[in-house]
Image 1 (spheres, rainbow, N blue to C red):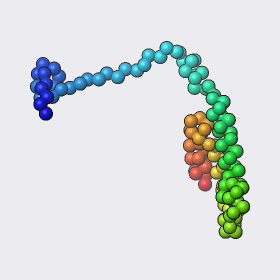
Image 2 (image 1 turned 90 degrees about the vertical axis):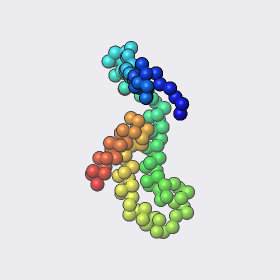
Image 3 (image 1 turned 45 degrees about the vertical axis):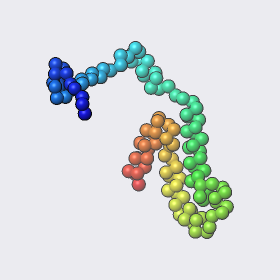
Image 4 (image 1 turned 180 degrees about the vertical axis):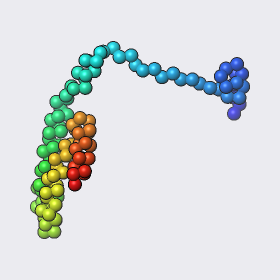
Length: 116
């Protein structure tokens, strides 16, 4: 308490009303510039995506996901790995989230789920 409102403003003596107008930012570039920005490729992200894609397949092939884990795995681990290996390889085809800000991964994963 103790707030005093001005009776001559919006809301009167009992409350205060604030009106906010949100306006869009005026674009200084044209359509071609925005299209060019959309198709600009960051080569570092592509290289990272390629490395992650390769790592997905390596993890799918090895029992436990790595050479070290494969050496210490049990017979049951190895047997179950070889049973599910086709599924692991199929879903390793889903690209990592590094491409197209994750939209390619999302789209391909939905297609794979629909396929299965």
